[in-house]
Amino acid sequence: MKNLLNLRDCGSEDVLGLVELAEQVKQHPRNYSHIMVDKTLLMIFEKPSLRTRLSFEIGAYQLGGQAIYYDMSTSPMGAGKESIADSIRVVSRFNDIVMARLKNHEDLLEMAEYATIPVINALTDFSHPCQVLADLLTISEKKGALKGLKLAYLGDANNNVTHSLLFGCAQCGIDIAVGCPDDPELRTSEKVLEDACAIAGKNGSKVEMVFDADAAAAAADVVYTDSWMSYHIPKEQQAERERKLRPYQVDADLMKLAKNDAIFMNCLPAMRGFEQTAEVIDGPQSVVFDEAENRLYAQKAVIISLLKDG
Image 1 (cartoon, rainbow, N blue to C red):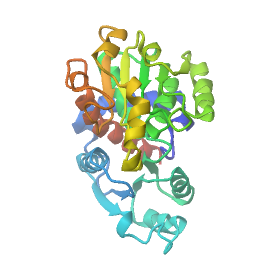
Image 2 (image 1 turned 180 degrees about the vertical axis):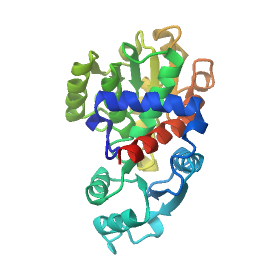
Image 3 (image 1 turned 135 degrees about the horizontal axis):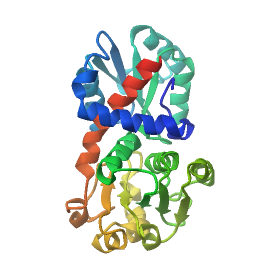
């Protein structure tokens, strides 16, 4: 891989290889502590962050390198003063690798087109591959394997995490059932579903979208949900979104429809009483903090892989 922009465009062997490498990094961190000696990671942030900034910054230090935080809100980059294409050409002269957390996926693609160093997607409006690599690492740890499992996603399905889950599960041979309202603003697009189905077909798994939470959760090994109010959604939409998404809340009754040993996941931040109840997220089946920790190892694996291939 030259860049990590979208799990759809990776090969199955790339995704599985990154998960395996993340496991090795987690188990044997000292074996990789020299990878970034005399190297710098530039972290470009257009959207706010907790887990993304900390995990990438700490990851770079633990690999022996340095990380620089760059806030686009105080920058000429992309603000009409300097084009993204020109900015990333300059960035490439100073740094060894760059990650970007941006609003628009098209801006990330432009960065990748003009950069001469590896580019990592740390989140866009379309895709969040690093999060899902951490999710796959967590599932592998808890279940011992990936292929043949079923993941049920409940809630707002027209977002970056759902897209990356669809592509990531399809690449790894995991069946995925998306349970969401039959609403164009909340359901996954036909194009994303078609792409995920095509990948799943090559890896022996299936993809489905259903407008019934119980049907999605039935016999699932993993139950996953995400925020009903992502960063970009105006506060005045909360009441209407809550009304539409309430039937897809993950509660104890819904978890009973999944397998007895099913795990519960949420990429965080989470609001108790909204996308899931406190009983679920704070209960024994929840692995949300293991999932958050695994961002560190998954992203270190991405950095190692891209620097090696570069």
